[in-house]
Amino acid sequence: MKYRALLLPVFVIFLVGCKQHLLTDYRPLDKAGMWSGGLEQLKALNTSDSEVAQLVKVKQAQLSDDACIALVAAAHERKHPFTSGDSTVNLVGAGYSEAQILEIARADQLDAISGDAVALRLIGLSDSFVGFVLQRRLQGQRTLGTPQIAHLKNTGLSEKQILEKIKAGMTDAQADREVAAREAARNHAGTDFVHVRGRKPR
Image 1 (cartoon, rainbow, N blue to C red):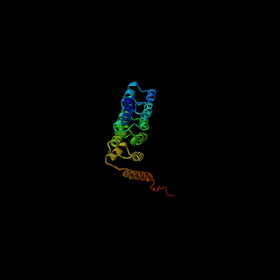
Image 2 (image 1 turned 90 degrees about the vertical axis):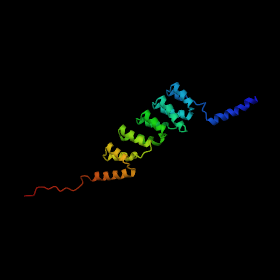
Image 3 (image 1 turned 180 degrees about the vertical axis):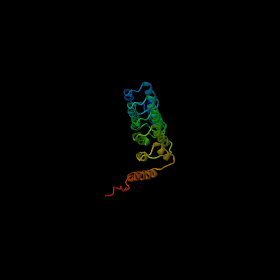
């Protein structure tokens, strides 16, 4: 009896120290359509109840089991739980592929750039343009803010012209000034007074 009594607190301390989630309820994911193989992999990743709740949102957005597992693995690699269910769902809704979403997740940027990434899609830019801007942001390279890109596009610049400005290192402040100048020029276009001569009276 004494031997068992001594083992119990040691066992509890071991569990607390390792932050094991032995009692995690995986049934919500099962109901969301995840296969048993995926559930077993999540158990191996020591997934918590809160992470399961996040993954249910992701699974309902039609991401694959493999993508769900990769999201948890990427978060754990960064030493924190997966808490970005909403950001992931927003990216799915904006048309980003699983590969793109996982690339963002592995860079630990899901919550940081999902809003801008979704906005880039809403502007109506091409996939190649969005991919270029996204890559620069993930790599920490300078790029224009989404509002500045939208404003430049609205003033009539093509995607190619905007890309050239990004590559040249244009800042948001410089973009704002160019937008203001282009809008002023557009507003004044065709407003010069033109004297129209009529026929001279006989």
